Image 1 (cartoon, one colour):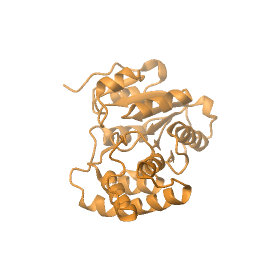
Image 2: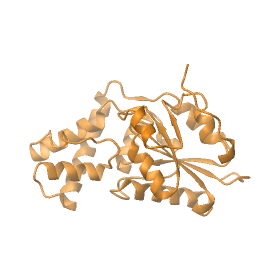
Image 3: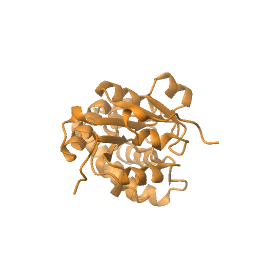
Image 4: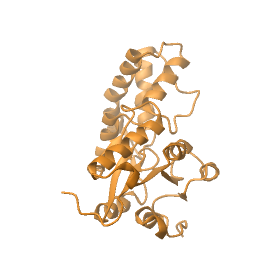
Length: 245
């Protein structure tokens, strides 16, 4: 049962790879295997960065890069192949781990009044579940937006927020929404929807590049001093952020 909230609810929308977990290239290897086995081109995605793209957008770009028509059937076949290989890659992965501060942030969010944690990720829902089940994190997230919902990150972020608002039985306009991610595309998706953006420099994008995108807050990881307090505080009570000493 939902607790009675004495302040407007806050919806925390977490990205996954580079934000919650260090994936150690696990998804990339599964994707490359799918391209190689289905199309004979394991290098299909070598010419562009995957950071911040949705799984569907990655599949489309990879198919186009090797001259395959990127229609819905081809994208579905490629992503089905990726999911079929993901479990094997997760079992073999070394260095796949929960990032610093994540477990503490989710534990505190679960106990805080008016805070609800969800996902706003470019992963397919099935892929996100596999990745988070692997490190026992999936159960922390009551809702989410995924690549199944939209190929475009701003739209899937909006869908995630709408699901969160429905869950807390409040209109979305009455909720504070914070998008937590490690790429400039996460920041842009937050801005496109009028949400707050909390960037973490724990993924492949340099801190300086994230800072140039002007998020509302920027931390090296969620273990930085003040990072979790910033996420859980009321809008007018945000503490300053400092890097870990």
